[in-house]
Length: 330
Length: 259
Image 1: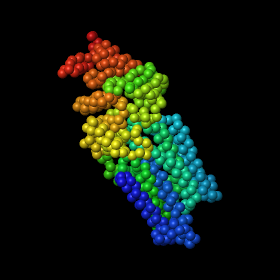
Image 2: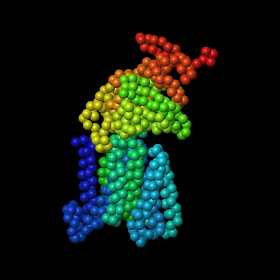
Image 3: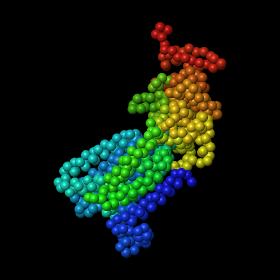
Image 4: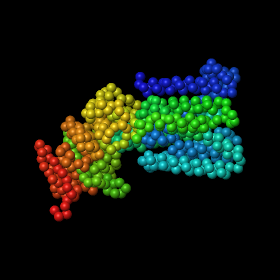
């Protein structure tokens, strides 16, 4: 069995164990047995309901979003051949945030909470359509990213404007809390809202591995090997835009996962850009599950937001990894 | 069996880069592509490889128009060796040479045992075996050139298109790369080399293609292409020539205003 396959199995096992452990944590302490019963034999007793209706959607959503961030980060770094690329560079996260703050500003979430993710998806969709229009005309990946950074800045300016115009401090607080990212109180509805888009993104990116490997020696050489570069770029950028847009829409901005996960995978599994996609998905899911467990630890004052925890774990990990791998860089 | 361009024209941003260029590259010969900077040498190479789209004219490889070949079929016919190409990740030499098999594998296929043998033999031909496990980021310029050449060889393509394969290499490594390319041509590969060193072009190439300002000046044996009047009119230089141990040499001088 190759090293990659065994690493994937280890990561998958760790992910499942972390998810089960995560299901036991909460206001009501449950044992692993309770969790097993709740997951595999749902019945009407309160413990089963806690597990299957409250905790399971949150844990599954965390895995889904973590893996979407991990895969998109790995694919974008591969296609841009830049280890600093992160899903934020294509501007979709910021646009989703703009949609969400507009929903909060208008107060539509008080009518129906799902208006926040729906507005956020609208924002993400708009950014994706702009990227799509650019990618049809522009062959250069750099141009696409510059456009992405432009979209991102514009959307952040929009977010600032909305916050500036907000009349009540409560709604500003809601906006900030949303942007810090959280899985709290997410239900099966949120899960099913994000799932189809994240899956679509994955399907688009499912076979880009060989192209990403070939791109290690530059665009011209990759094309000389029969790689359709426009198609590769389209799949990665639009595929990430769709899945990141959906992920951010349901749980806010979760920083550093997309940036740091591919680096962790490169350090422990493989450096081949096409082969880090699956381990990055598993690692992203694992990291987010662990981070979400930390947010549920009792803390003085307000509950920790997920995005805060991921950044607090992510940034030092990132620094450690670049310190350790500095010899391999030029 | 040959590679052919017929009256190709290339425009970039409405500037004419190549005008009516018709050339051939036969299997079993090494052809040097020479001309001053900006003559269109690299552009011609990229058109042949399908990396640049021609405005008019046709390019065929073994009697098939390259536009009719799917990308990977085209990639099996022609390998590209750009010595100055970037390598972006700290991958091993084996990883990079292994990329040569990409045209032969579908998107899901992994490298098979047969592929491994081909990769191994490409590394042997270019003296890279001892570098196998090294990170490409730790290689010297000469080693890096050999690794990229091994990557091109691992495609097993009958035509090798080399873009300035010896620029920025020391004299020993220049000769090493030229010898490997020469050996390939003797093994019935067609080798096209963009180069600036006219003395090495004279020694190693079976034929030379001379371009100037996007136009084909001539394609013939090196002694005809590197004649005094062509060197003067195209490059604005003159040459001293001599023969040593049966090999021809040439060294270039600036043309003196008086002479």
